Image 1 (cartoon, rainbow, N blue to C red):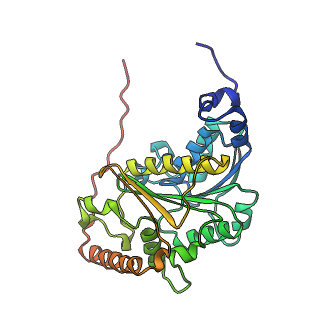
Image 2: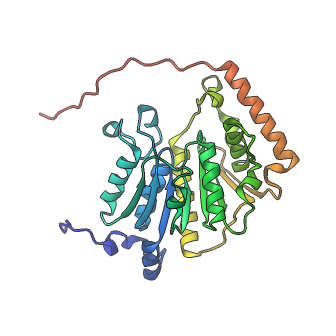
Image 3: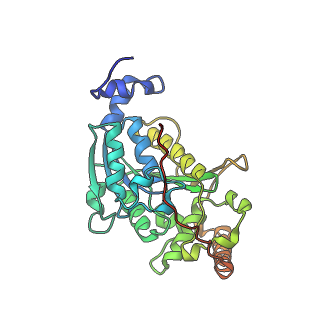
Length: 311
């Protein structure tokens, strides 16, 4: 086995060749991707796109890893607890490709930096926390106005729902029926219903008494996060290379591995249609009911992790 101590781009990503041509791989290398959020899905997106061979990134997050991130977040481990997600994820990505150019936005995305975050970017990736609806609305609107395609893929149970916004899509505010009078929770519900109109995941929640979206208590599975990353990277791949057909919004897509179902369709009127408006009201009613019935999870006794040593 050859001792390889120096990084070589062509060798590191040579196994991509076949699915992409040599010239396409170099094209991918020159592209710039902006990733907003490096937590539940964004961190996985970042690492997977790095392994695709993308070499230029803008990344943003203002959070730190904590123990509740362990079940699904690609960058979370005992050694990362308390670390800033931007710092930890960039370190991991540089370990894959030490030649990365990464511009960090360690205060997250906001009105003050959104233009810099999107400057010279080829594709925007939404990895924002579910509970950052106003930032998500800002990101979607600015990307649309700047004619930069945006991909979002949300982990939902053991599946994912995803949307692409490009020049053929309606304005995101129009699709999701966002307006300035909406509260954060109303924006969140409008986003969820527009992302996954069929809500395949809702049929197998096993312990609803421990879930309360209105209180920030949501459930997640690693299966959904990793499926979301796989789908999103495939869509970014298509957008970067102009490959294949992109079903952009108002088309929606959702795949659920537990139900063995893939559904897709076209919401001509987005959330402004009567059926979508009804779903929004029903979801909000369900969330309020879950809040009333919510039972906090019991805390397990803290313990010290002991590493076994070989004699």
